[in-house]
Length: 556
Image (tube, rainbow, N blue to C red; front, side, top):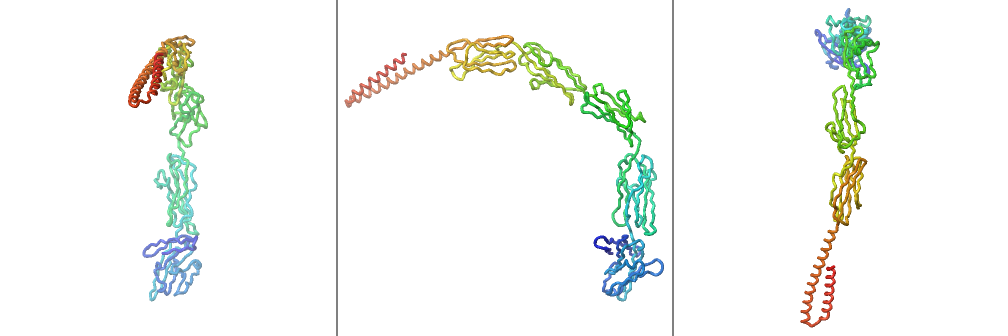
């Protein structure tokens, strides 16, 4: 079987489906297209055929001749009826029938003379046409739960054979059950074209879950792909069965904020009026589902309800909690105390929930709340407490100053960088910062930073004699002083003189020994040669003078 196109662009020949029905070959063609009717399935060789002739069964009377071909001659059209201008013969002796219609559904016969044999090959022709469109019309405005309602009509126009329509919900086929689903189909045939239009009416009892469900209808043509209509959705109406009270507010909700109550009902269409129960007071709202409470306070905390106006027994409940956190620290601010005093802290907390307390001193975390039995200077500083409850927090602080007369805790000597100087350090406690002075002047003075009521003062000096040095401190609350004995550097100078004298004596002995050795050698030379006696005498005198000079220095 072969299907040829009427043109290269727009007249695609349909693929012919063949089947044997009671020994009769059948060809299915598409409405309006060119149909190729094969002669003996195209199995004949052109050189063997002496004559090929096509005719068709009119139903009544003799068959109608269509065309004939002899030898190598061109085919001659013999038809005088509607086929005269619609038929031609292919090279393989197939009959080509253009613009196929339902009236072409006949039995066509190809008669072939090949040598001494004459054979006939009848072919049954069936014309099909897919629907021009598939649409859902006459749709319902809304569907009510539990009520069988005519949802719509699906129409498949001008088809052959008549279209078989299937209804679908969310791409799942619906089957009539005589209860919630009813499908009624009807077919009308066009008296002129013979084409059929199928109408299918769906009656459906909706459920709540059918909200936003997509309804479609489809049909499967004899040849080609499935046709599916555009989806249609419906409004599903049902009474309210449940309501929910929603609370919208900042998190956390604190005093001064606003809180909005919203009543949500599952009915469709939803109710337009609600009753809001505000801690014993009922407020009715029309054409709205919300109520806003402004500038809430801790007294706003409580149970709230909403209900339907037409069914007060259907209600919803929610609790509203207004969070608050108040703290009071006593004492606070700038606090001035005297060293040795007692100070009691009192932290009062009023909160709507569980809270945590933390303390710092000068931004350093403390393990617990400070206690002051007897204040010392080290207790001075900035104290801050922070109370947290979830996302809420409050802070309080005080600056503690501990005052008192200065006291010299220690006056001590320190090693110096060289042996000629003395270093004294005076360690003092007191507040405000004490003034420090010394009873002597030093070559340098050093003072440490004043921290926690403590200060260190260091003096460097060179004493000429043994003396007593005093450190004196004072502030607006009193004064104190301490003294220390410092030895002079004279003992060190005596040790130096003794060392110099001993050194000179040793030097004299060395020179004397050298002189004796020299004289001994000189005399031995004179005895042998008799020369240089005068020169030796002069050198001897010079050495004696040096020895005498060194001796005098040693005595000094």
